[in-house]
Amino acid sequence: MRKKGGVSLLGWIVITALTGAIAFVCVSLWASRQAYLREAAVTPTPSITPRTVRITEDPARPTSTPTPRLFQSGSVGIEIKQLQERLKALGYYSGETDGEYGAGTKAAVESFQALHGLDADGVAGESTLTLLYAQSAQAFRETPAPTATPESKLLSTGDQGEKVVRLQQRLQELGFYSGKIDGDYGKGTRNAVILFQRQHGLDADGIAGEKTQAVLYSDQAKPVEVTPTPEAIQVLSGSLPLLVNRQYPLDDGFAPADLVNMSDYCDSSLVKIKYKDTMGVREAVDMLMEMLQAAKDDGVTNWQVSAAYRSIKDQQSIFDAKVQDYMDKNGLSRAKAVSATRKTVADPGTSEHHTGLAFDITVPNTSSFISTEQCKWLHRHCWDYGFVVRYQKDKEDITGFLAEAWHIRYVGKEHSAVMRDRNLCLEEYLDLLMRQGTP
Ligand SMILES: [Zn+2]
Image 1 (cartoon, rainbow, N blue to C red):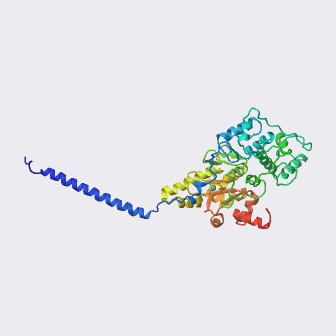
Image 2: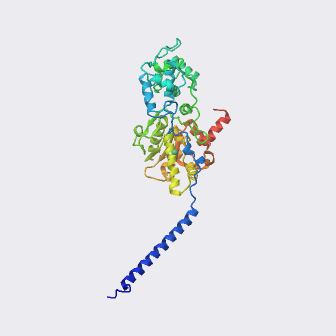
Image 3: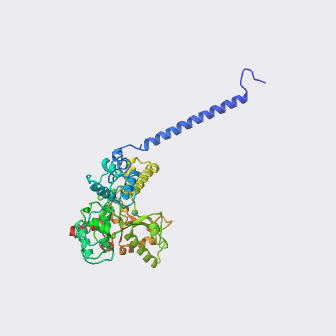
């Protein structure tokens, strides 16, 4: 054994191999570090420019309500639900106890305040809340109707005559009705009644029953609030279509009347509703179904609705998700991701889907709608049913949106036919009407 004074041959081989391996690892690490540094120099580092990040400072997000004992329009949460329940128990409120402080809740608070000698501002502050939850809180009493009140008989769609004339006149006086005073309780009258009911915390059933008439002909009747809500209803009663875009966003609290759950409401043999509980405005949904029945008669079937009504909350999450996607997948800075997102996703509050009148029509399991026979049929015929193809290629400059073959918007037949014949998008059409003085 030659052990003493040296290292064995095997030892030398091991040492040499180890040294080589260590050197190799070092060189590799160095090379990849260099590659990383080169890359880092090219890839823009996401810069944090909070002023351009609209979404983080959007006032629409109801997350921060630091004052716990003051509730008003726009407030949301469990306390609002409790407030609504209490108002309901006392008979001031008959809407949904959904935890959202909307016009109905405000009106109920006002009635409560008026009856309790408080300043009827519709804001539930400390003194209102104290009285409201007190044992001594008084239940709602209707102010006795003046003598001119028509005898309290229920009026509803289809009714005609003198009483309907008076109803229309009163609704018009308060700004809820802008149609003809013809004594016909039609859709326009019904919508006006619904609007009146919503604004006064009454059950919004469109029937002028005893309670509705009592409030309508009393001092409690308030003129129409100028919010976009009435426009959504008017759009379906023969006046101008509602315009929603970046210049004309909808109010955060906007909610269209008469929404139906399309998942239950629509004939599933005509259309597939992609997402459960998709909502749409009844009249528009009715026309959509009429249209799809006609398509079926023409042999064109296999339709899908992949989007309809979107609340402001839904719009915000869609927007946020898209921004995040651009940042994660394309490595864009937040500011760049926001501007990229704005090309295809409406800013929260500016989506037509907020009206409940817009629908994204697709074909199940088909990614390119534009190349389908359904798309061809839709673009040819939707106008006959009151729909328009809202975002078209030749109108991108005006609408500010890239063309969307799948997005149709209900405006009513009388408008859609003109827009088709004269090749006008909604912005151009309304502009033309304004210039002609036909508002
Ligand atoms: Zn759409």
